Image (cartoon, rainbow, N blue to C red; front, side, top):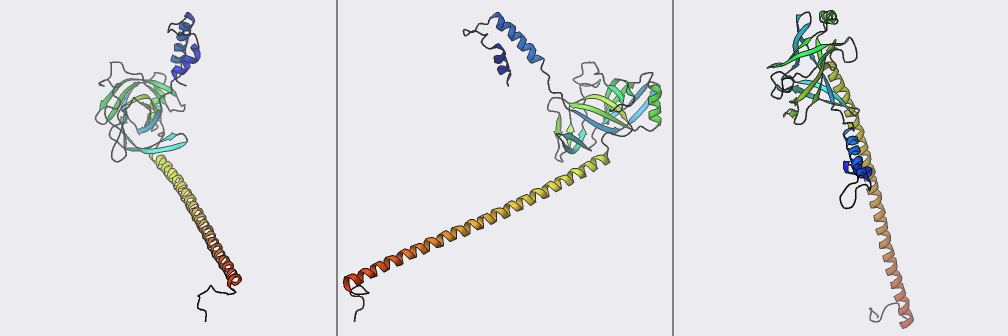
Length: 288
């Protein structure tokens, strides 16, 4: 239903035919406007990616590191309506413009982004990012660790936590460029949060395994489709053959009936000759 349909359904006949509105219509119009503005908008899709961490602990409560590499192509997978969308992806410099300190669209206010421990729980919120910077090799950031979480973060780093996992959303189009090799280069995205992960949400081996699984599924589906097509073609050929045989039988019967009709006609003429002339042949047919 369109917005106009919604308005018409609510206002009904409160709007007069001459174009004026009653106080009731005005009131209802305000209510409709409030109703429409309060409708939930579909949330932008959130993507998750994992990268090897390059973190440096500059003091007890400050971490600095690269969050997203630029110009690096990786196999990724996204689940879309129960199917896996597997492709190659990379981020171009400028993709996070608007959040970085030097971004052309940045109004001087850094969007608050938090560092958490694992997307699925863990130690929870570890602290806020205080700066994002672009370098030639990627997006870098500074995070201030909460005093109560500083010992835990230090322990995680010593234990070998070697990956960061980010969540991001695509900005308004154009936000992606696809090159001649099919690589999707993200050019305009919004970083939501960053997580310390003992292993990435989507490691290369897992992506390859999922790719192999999807390829096998696609192969099976292709074989099933080919078998179904072959069965259909066989059925069509058998049907065509049966139809051709039936048509030939009809033609043979027509020819037979036509011949029988001619013979019957000849026999009738022969009988008429006998009756008229006492002859079995018409007059003048080689009589001696």
